[in-house]
Length: 235
Image 1 (tube, rainbow, N blue to C red):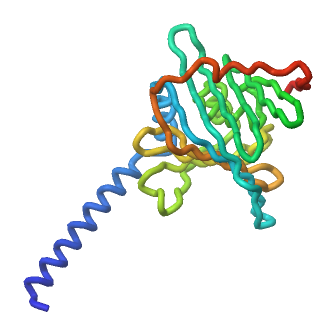
Image 2 (image 1 turned 180 degrees about the vertical axis):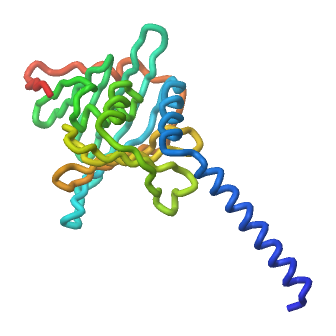
Image 3 (image 1 turned 135 degrees about the vertical axis):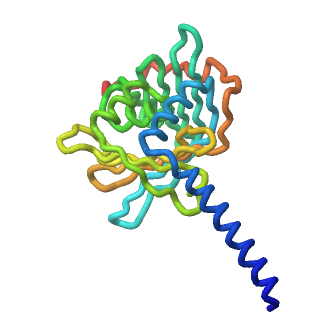
């Protein structure tokens, strides 16, 4: 090959590497604490979220996982005196509906005619996971009080698109999730996937896709009219 052409190729390759390195450096410049703070700011600035959701429970110690559960996620951040409201509806393989309003949640399971009621400030999986998705102050305080924050690598295919945060439970903390991982979209700083590593080593993963921001969300989605024969349990 002609020396001048070799020089051109080498220079071009070097420029590409420098540009790539600059991009990665800019992408990685934020500390985990800064990413988390940006996530909270982004959540407070969004008026609504509508997305598809997938939930998968896996058992790494056995090398198996349950069939994926799919449905929709709705968030209305409210305005004025209105509090934030959430609806997470699993539609397949069977219906389950979670609503959150004014710090209280209801998890309705029509097949077994049962509804679990609780507050987001609790340490249960439902309360904390709902709180993370909504940007609840109670969930934020729980993460700060009961967990140690560090960075975690995103899957290689997503490394330029998301920031990874890992929360490891502190010794003696009374929590359901011994470890939580949150993957935050690098463009919007909103959480798009989170995992809960339970004490029994099973793992639950929530993933949001087809996300629409700041669109209209109908009020009736957050109203859960339970049949009279539904058993109500307190979490």
